[in-house]
Image (cartoon, rainbow, N blue to C red; front, top):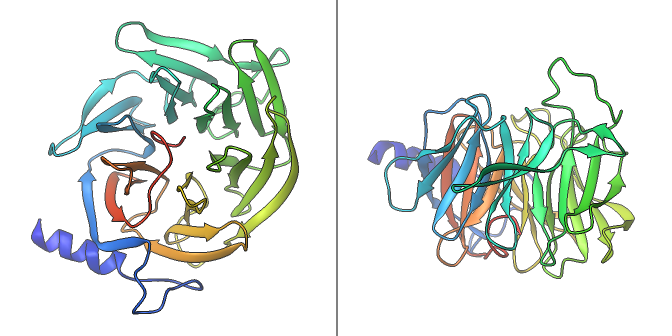
Length: 307
């Protein structure tokens, strides 16, 4: 384990491209703390911290796993999972899932099992919800690309970003113009929604109204780089409003006001998603193909998991 950890630290210490900090300036990430938290899966995704443990998906493995901080191995939380991808929590702390296999946003509890929250837009079946966040008033926001369609044909006919009010059943189409909308997160004041587009390697911002409608769509950053493995995928925000997201080579941190990439972290394998965790939400959990990694930072995340 010592040799593995040393190798991870050496890899994590590399900075790439613009935005590298001066040598005497502490970075946001503490690269020497990068460690392997869990391994042996097919394709990990959707990390979410519930206050004591990290929950993540193995999409092809059709299972959701849970890893308690300090334990050496994860265990199955539930299976089958309808090929669940992204996760978050509702206002009662119940697990919310974006499911590829079913094309639905669902809720899961140990007592009641799986409950479908929303599976259609204007009477047409959703594609394959990818990631989901919950606003502090309970509004659910999620992305719906076609990755999990399999042999199905898209009924809605586009990749969408949606807002859904479970209490009223009202659903708002925020955007149908992104090719592959993927990770998403809210700004600290919840007035801005950030969404990553995997196909174009871009991150976008929207001004989000109380009713879930959005305006002012604008490009935050384009990190296209075909020389490195990885894509824009999972996305989170810290308390200072900086946007953290997976990108070519690992993880990028961008200042949304300037659009500048201010820091990068190289990961041993292609990163797919990330979530804040730990007692003070300063640890970053990163899913990366067969593995889950953990690294300490000098930033703090917002709320539990992606919210």
